[in-house]
Picture 1 (cartoon, rainbow, N blue to C red):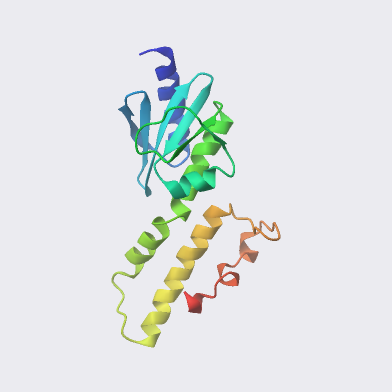
Picture 2: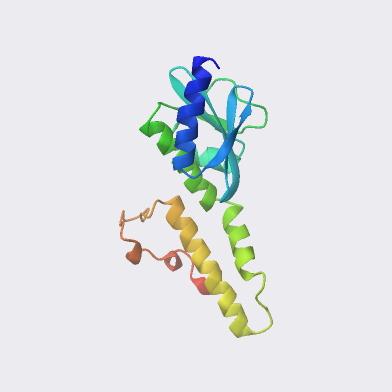
Length: 174
């Protein structure tokens, strides 16, 4: 294996495992396919000396990541929405971790989690509907906490016990 492939395999795999994508990577030409048991989103990572390049097929993830990370202008595999570059070490870990957080917080993951939680609940009376709405509220809150990194985007408060998803949308209206 040539040097760049070794760097990608070792450091890319380490960053993936520590940041939400622990499934053994699959080699795809010069890229490694990163997978997670907790989200359907996948990433591709490669090493283009002196940077790592991480690509996603998700337009939603790419749009959000573009607000924080440097976009890669080089060639990417077919089907990818956008790629981003990062130095080895902390920047690579931060990029993959943010992709994981976004993968949990953006569609379709919250909807799939909600549907799984309420699949067995009956929906015939008002009291049963209340249970479904409350279950939906915790999914909504968890997604917001992941997306905003447990920080209020308006005030900057970082105390989770003070952050309420119902301040955005009351649970009764969900």
